[in-house]
Image 1: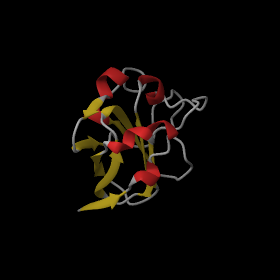
Image 2: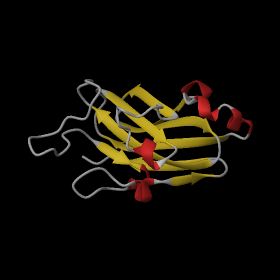
Image 3: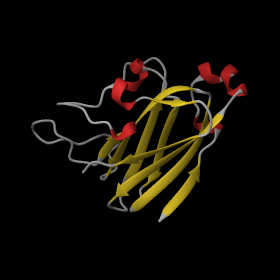
Image 4: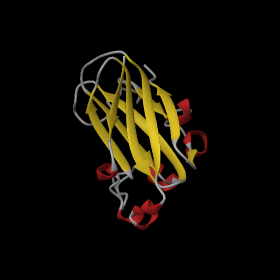
Length: 146
């Protein structure tokens, strides 16, 4: 069952967007294949390749950062953003520790995904594979990898 969680301008945390919000569009993000109703679903949406790396050294937070209690099935979120190029990544943080757990060789132990359902080779998906354009009201569906 899908549940829509409206998340408005309060989630747009980058001050750089303030002037651009004159022309804002709705981005609807649907996360599919959530197998468990435990932990948190964490979503970050970046507006640049550098921001997509989400390093802790990054000067600015991503424009959208969502953390919501997970519900099995499908969850839908709505945010308002200015037109542009974006990329998203998702983590189902099953144990609620705020980070992706991995095994001894670095493979994720928790469900994860990227926009365009992009996957990486021996690491996260690349910006070129995950980016998408918002040029009007836009909907993306992202399926979790298990």
